[in-house]
Amino acid sequence: MFDFISFIPRAIMQGVPLLFGSTGETLTEKSGNLNLGIPGIMYVGAISGVVGSFFYEQSGNTNTFLMLAIPLCCSLLGSLLMGLLYCFLTVTLRANQNVTGLALTTFGVGIGNFFGGSLIKLAGAEVPAIVLGATSRCFCATLPAAEKLGWFGKLFLSYGFLAYVSVIIALTAAYILKRTRVGLHLRAVGESPTTADAAGINVSKYKYISTCAGSMIAGLGGLYYIMDYTKGIWSSDAFGDRGWLAIALVIFTIWRPNVGVLASFLFGGLYILHMYIPSGMNLAIKELYKMAPYVVTIVVLIISSMRNKRENQPPASLGLAYFREER
Image (cartoon, rainbow, N blue to C red):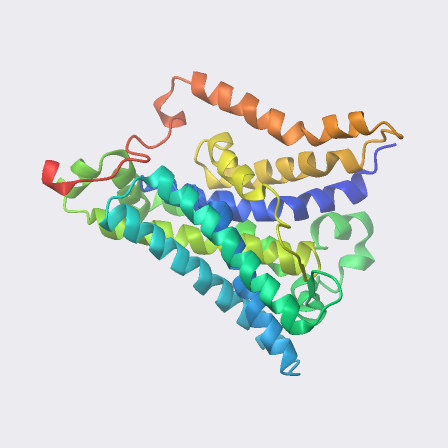
């Protein structure tokens, strides 16, 4: 029988990085910026946190607050710099957004592997990996009552604090976009920057702020994956294609971060489904199960392209540079 009690928590943990990434990309795309550099930004957010926690652990200190604060601050700073770089190239210099995003992905993965490899040599590890056990235990700490409440505790209370933070950020982003003046201005910039500019809205400011905030949120997804999901183990090219799935989730959720909460957990479950469905020794069947999230992504893209409602379409100026001189 399928073990839902062990599958659902694992699916949620797998979906949290996707939720961080999709929420950050949704905020970015709502301003009209198409940031395909999310995979690289998540990579930089992860390695930045790893670097900070590595040197703190090497110092011999064990302050719990600093073990949480240092990697968090480093991750946010690293992903912020990536967001600023993207904005400088696409908003200030008006470079092509698709090319810039792909370049940032390649750059971010290269940066992560370079510094990760350097730390592995510095630590003198016998295997090509870094283990940050003390920091990981702080990030993985659960509520004290989780183990005493049986299946309820395992399904709802057995996660590190970043998992709950991801849900809070997604719901807050949905509220800001839908219910506040800031969200209205941001959506106006994404739909028609010319009209927004004529109405006195600072287009460049909104693009910078939303893209940088989205990058920082996405960077937390990378940090969560390393510190919580893999229990503090960093190895090169460990992320797989989670960054790209996060971008696909933005379309799947119709640019709604609140819908992204359940959608991310669904994709997280599809990502690990092959581990829970018995396939015996038939490796071909297992590989078919591994295709599940990508098949769903393709189906979603087909369905979304057939929608005719305007509210289900991407921002009208998505991926287009804004030239104020042409207003």
